[in-house]
Image 1: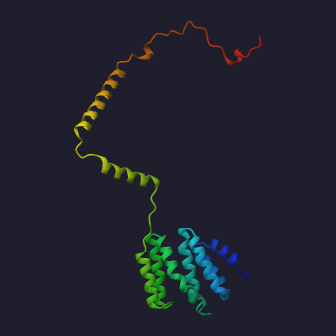
Image 2: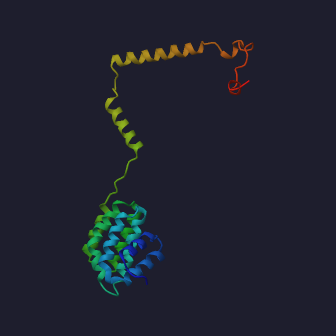
Length: 211
């Protein structure tokens, strides 16, 4: 297997995909370099925070595979992952939808069933997943629409005062008069052709002619 380094691990994490083969291949490489477990967990945690929301669940699948399959060789990863799992599950839950949270709960159920960690620790992680809410980002249009609705609700009078009614009636009357005036204008297509006897305008070539 290739030698271990932080940069090599960062590259492999960047190339990690949400497939069983990809997760298991990297998991085997990490377990092979388990003497660097503390560094591996530190880099994993850091890159998890930087990953796109759609890839964060894959990072936890990787941790799950490493934790479970490394137990036969030693307790390094089980021990070194424990301090960052609360923050990791909280972070992924806050960035995930309900479907993703179901996958997180499935991982924790397996851990509890196989006694990967103590029950009270797993219960703490379950509580985090069930209560963490994702903050929904609003688009500019949504914010503007909400602000408009708030303005209208606060500033539109339920019963317009007499002055408001008077101005509204005046505007309506002006619109009617303007529409009537436009309709009374003559049809320009019916006017006589007054350009028939005029000479054509010179072209650009005529203007720059040297003759």
